[in-house]
Amino acid sequence: MPPKIKTALFWIIAIFLVYAIVTSPDRAADAVRAVWDIIVSAFSSFAQFFANLTE
Image 1: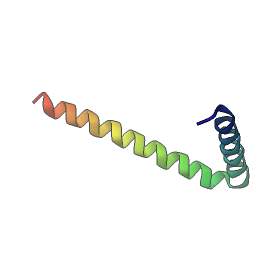
Image 2: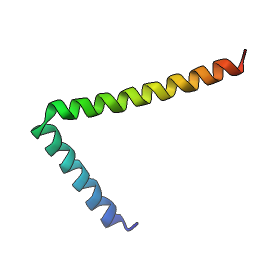
Image 3: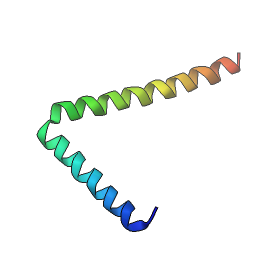
Image 4: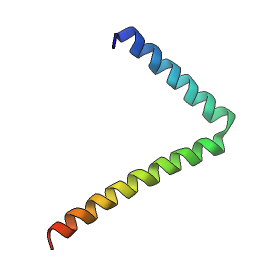
């Protein structure tokens, strides 16, 4: 992908995120919380998997 397109996409996404946070902070916080829960769950599952390997 050409560098100018990457830069343009980056700025479009950044502006959209700022807009989403400013217009609806509660929904933005809920989305961040949901993503965080998914990440924590994934790491927990990996930890449980490796713990079960050592048994």
